[in-house]
Image (tube, rainbow, N blue to C red; front, side, top):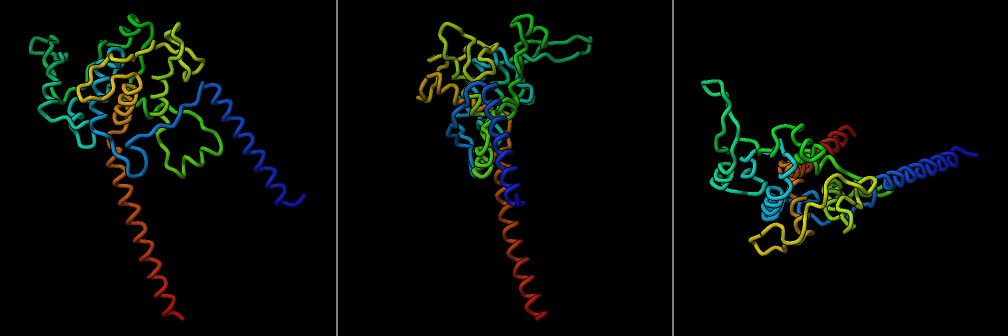
Length: 270
């Protein structure tokens, strides 16, 4: 057996093992999410500002009832590349919440209206209080869209890298929110490991009142809040992509100049 045959067999065996491992991972994670179309996908993708505003509305009215977002400050909502709320809107929004502050001059804690610099408050004072009420501590949603993913196996792992497909997490969140397929079991979810999730179905048609004419459906709510969670997990996504594009242009120009310089030097040497 020559070395090329040996290499081919080794490669085939390795690919087989990768494939079987991916299948096992897929089984452990339930159904594989379907790839969705997102405005922020690809090297030049950008967030849809209107979608982020709707997503924040769903997050505020539904998700934040149980979940925290400890990395979200009110002022972030007016930052460039985000939902695009005005400073006045953010100030008014923050003032709707009572924020615990202190101690004051008497050493006592007190409540005051929220400010743009404050973090978005959680409904529970601590994880123990949340567990006592809900039975579990709901995960923080600040990084959820980047923390969750799923295995696509070989050769999709290579294709994803070439296509710059980086939306596994947000696809998973969207699929999870739409994965409640058993009307008799509110906690059954097709995409959650084991098919059983601690969170009952959170979304339903007409639950959130959109004012921009968008469909008031579970699918639309899930799409919008998933996009918002993606922004929440990576608020500088647009800036990162712009910087990456500039770096690539610079490297291409630099490589061209280096090639021309090398060509001129070697031409003179000969």
